[in-house]
Length: 78
Image 1: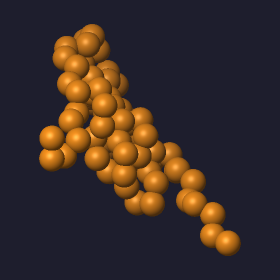
Image 2: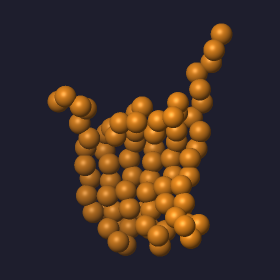
Image 3: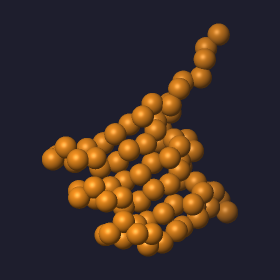
Image 4: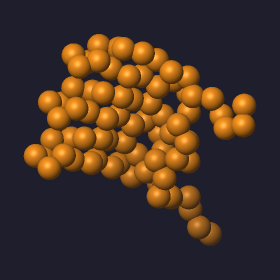
């Protein structure tokens, strides 16, 4: 019996070693909660993926890290 793969945390870095993005991968696809950062460490964008597709509410942050806008991702074909 094969068991489903477990999500694995993934962290991507800028050349200077600071975190560029952080989230989860499942079966080679973006999965679950992800967030992206500016080089100064302030969060730039965050949201969820299901099997590599953006779903639900996504948040974009301004240069100071305050919420700038929220976007609801619609399923493809709607």
